[in-house]
Length: 597
Image (cartoon, rainbow, N blue to C red):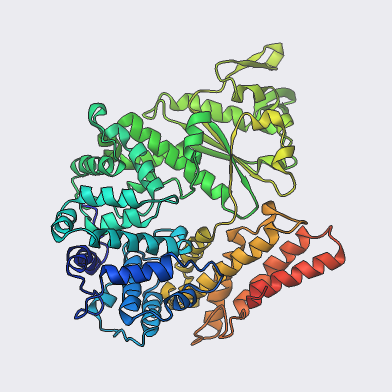
């Protein structure tokens, strides 16, 4: 069963079911139970004022919606309120307070009230999944999609509606038929809410694709379902039998480690690139989590290949051995300007008054790979992480081994002891992940010989990564600061922070003196957590931590600006004209501390 059970979610599924089996049958409201609002007339009015009247201004969603609903009947406002309600049923990433506040604001457009004791309203308390930042930024598209689905259903005969609700394949077919460019996340969300035993609690088609690929070998080659949802259901049944558990969650261990490669919406994911080319580089501005991603990618790649080679039965029965295998099969070296051939490949060293060759890090790794082939992990991948590759002279560091990265079937001869050559080849199961900060060097300046030996994946600032990181750091509340403050109490303040980080990075990316490679990574912004926790400890009882009531930065925000962000930007602009530097610094400061352009 794909139902989410970490807390009581029965009300979420209950009201989703009530909507498709009752509201779309008799028109009854979810929030105002005695009223009939789900009608084609109301949906036509909503279509005219919202769907066909797009407001592309930068105003807040509720401000734009108020203008669009101006002059509409109360029933149309109620309908709009319930469409937003349906949009809010799934996400756990939006606070309960914010959900209620938004719905009450919309209801107020027609002088309507929503009681806090409203059962349907209370179903929004937790949510069941995080649909990602696109769900927020494309809110109009998601609500539009839900409205068009409802309108299409209401135009059917009563008998056709009943047949539709009772047949998940017909609902899926209709949802797919109504999809337009952009692939609305609500397609996946609605299927799960309506039929939680058949469809996963996922909003991402990419996640479904990744799961389908990671566990594909579990299925009989002659009977693999074409549809990805049916494929995952078949995989779930196999996993349930192997693990003797029905309440499996692909977003929880031990399943998540086998497939979750991130939310990057690209044609080729880094883990797929690693499998294809055996060598990839993750590049971008400092502080964007490239090293962390490389480490996690290495672990998950090894787990995926182990699952593939061992089969699910052996894999899940040997989790302790696999954890050990993963640790043993990941190596990492950090390059620096002084790093050379002698450190990485081989060099001469004095030993007992005699000059001898000593193996460098790369040859030691190759020896580890050879030794490991005699253990239980024979044939499994080794992953070698080359961190901050651009800080060293790569042609000098790699020497004659450079060509081996491209032609693994060949060998090269290295100078050997007493004039005897030393033969070297790169094994087929050694994979390499490099990371690069290209702030001092554009990708165009990277040696072409190096470029063709790797696949390249850019990593920039991501708002969602920032929110995830600060939440994780916040929940690791230091004991020295006493009783922790719950994340839910500060979440909205960090959402404001994330918005301002996006704006300051947009300023940087569009500025002729800097550009996309100079955007500030989320790890820089996440330092505000430590400032904020100390601020709370030093001022017990303080309610707002990051911003005052006017939206201006308080102590933690000004501290982060003064001691981290401002010095970083000053360094970036050190070669700029004094006037230009002063102007940009003031613009950035006003955005970050005051929310002003």
